[in-house]
Amino acid sequence: MSTERPQIGLACNLESRDSDAVPEEVERLEEFADFHYREFNERSDWYSAPPPNEAVDSELIEFARGLDGLIVCHGSPRVTGSILDAAPRVRIVGELEGDRFAQRIDAEAAAMRGVRAVDTTNGSSYGVAEWALAMGMIGLRNAGFLFRRLIAGDYLWEDRDEWTKDPGYQKAELTGRTVGLIGAGHIGRRLLELLKPFRVSAFVHDPYVPRELADIYDVTFTSLDNVLSLSEVVFCLAPHTPATEGMIGAREISSMRPGTVFVNVSRGVIVDSNALIERLRLNDMIASLDVFDPEPIPVDSPIRDLPNVFLTPHIAGVNALGGARFFSLMVDEMRRFFSGHETRYDLLPRTLANRRGEEPGSLRDWV
Image (cartoon, rainbow, N blue to C red; front, side):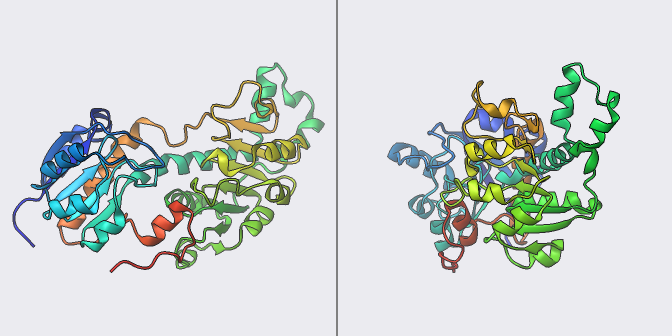
C-alpha cells in the first residue's frame, strides 16, 4: 500500500457540506488523508439521477483527477463511467445522502473499472430503528388513545372495569411477544439489536438479504402473509420501490389478527391508506404511524381522529445527529479502504435490485 496520504474530496452543495461534514468529522478524516471540497449545485432528487451536464461534468472531472477517493452528496453531478475514465486515480466513490437509492453513482460502471462504490445514507437508520421500537411500545400501551382521553379531561382510573378491558392494559408489555419485520435492511437489523433484551420471537420478510442473517439474529425468515398474520407487533421497514408501492393492501391488512399493533416508519405509499383506515375503524387493532399517504396528512383525513392511532409527522430519521453520522460513517469507510480493509456499505447487485424493485437474482454478480 502506498505511504502517500490519500487525497479525498467532497462534491456537493454548501447546505450538505455544512450539515454533514462537521468540523470534528473532517478532523478525523484528516488524521489519515488530505480533504478537499468543491461546491456543486446540480438538481437533487431521491428517485432519479441528476441530468447530464457537460460543463458541470467537466468541472467534476477536473476536481476528481487529483483524488484517490470521491464523496458525493446533494448538488453533485452523477459519477459516470466516462468521469471515472477521466479520473483514473479515484479508487473509491461514496454517496452520503441518497435516501438509499444512490442516484449520484453509476455503481455498475464503477465496478467494471475496479472502483469501490459505497453509500452511508443508512446514517439516518439509527434514529428510525429507535423510533420504531418506541412506536411499537406506544401501540402496545394504546398510548395514543390514552393521551386523547387525558387531554379531553378524562381519567380512566375512575372506571377500573373500563380500563382493564383496554388493549393497553391487556397487552402492555413487549417482552416475550411475537414481532414481525417487513424489511431487514439497516433499519431492520438495528431494530433487531434493540429488541434483544425483550426476548421476542421474530418473523422477518425480506427477499433481498442473505439467509445467514436468520442464524446471526435468531429470526425466522418467512412470507409477507406469515409476518402479518402471525405477529402481535408488525413493523413496516421496507423502502419505497416499484415493487413495494401498495404492497400492503386490503387483503394484507385484513390478515392481521385482532389486537395487532401495526407500526410504519418507512413510507406511507407502501400501505393502502383507505384500506388501513377501514380496518382501524373496526377498532380491533392499533396503528402507530410516522408516515402516511398522502403527506402531509390532510387536515380532514379520518386517520387524524381515530382513537386507536398514534401519529407523528415523518420525523423518525430526522434529527441533528443524522447528518453528521452520514459523514462519520463515510470517514470510517474511507479509513477502512485506505488501510487495506473491506468496506461495509458496498453498492452491490443485490442492494440495487432491492432499491429498484427488481427480482433479487436478476442482476449478475460484478467481477
